Length: 221
Image (cartoon, one colour):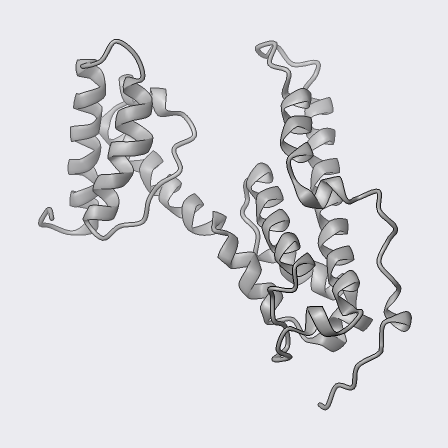
């Protein structure tokens, strides 16, 4: 492990990574090899969080301080982007709120999501699958998603939030159509991503029962 404070360690790792990339040891895939793979390996090896680097090519020419700033931002993005954030929030939801206050639950889950729109979709899809399979315990009730009709209520909350996020992304794409940007078919890419998500594939299935219809368990407060 490297010695020094966290900033010194990150700076040393970034300097080494940038040097490897600029040396261009391989005919192809230098960026993919040295930035997402080696950089994160070195960060973890030194007890630091991995980083999500949105533009690995920056390591070809950006200054050391600029790259250190990007890595720090990427480390924060990684911490925000773990699926466990939304899963923990869902596990802490009270069953009475799931049944009676879906908007409140939706707001709480929303606050636990990453600031990155596409990562938000993944953070909603994975818990949705777990809820559908009865693998999430909420409000201290063991395997309650398997033993009551509250599972559809929670699935509906997640699905509604997911659809809101997709609509927000599409609205943002439409607002950028007039700008001078590379001809990337971002709308098609979004469709390809959502089509792989179980939560999206089931969005046309009948909506979950309303809360008044799902109060089939006794909750002692």
